[in-house]
Amino acid sequence: DGSLNNGFEIITVPFDNNYYEEEGKELLINMLDLLKENKFISHDTSTCGYHIHVGRHGLGRNYGERLNTIMNINLVCEYFKEELTLLSRRKETQLNRWAKFLTSGINKQNLTTDKVEELVKNNKQRYSAINLNNESTIEFRIFRGTLKKETFLATYELVHNICKYC
Image (cartoon, rainbow, N blue to C red; front, side, top):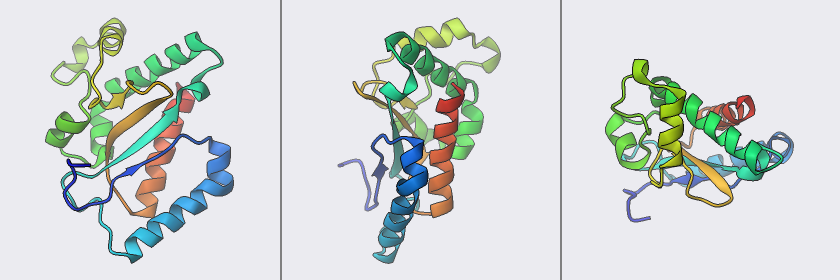
């Protein structure tokens, strides 16, 4: 990836939470240990991200349910963009470049469900906080890269819980 400056960016593949609990968590921890042992860096760069892909088929039984869940995910993320910006460990300038919130520049008090739905439906940008351009997945792009186990796992679990809630 030409946008990276000497760091390791992690982009997940979709997997269900049963796999995560039974095998995936241990594999991810081992991967992070191996990367750190070999002197890789991620957080200590200005460019590396941690992108989490969520399979669309896991978000509902049919197209309508999936669309509704995806809209709810966007509503939650846009409404809590200040809190998610803090949890992302990115500067606002980094988010605006690689993972811009759709409602950036819109006062939260003026934010309506209809406005967010309109923004989501018209969003064709890859570099959005929630990238919807992939056919089989949605991609959470907001998080800064990390090789720290606790941060990595907490970030995955945050995304899982947002999706489960929505």
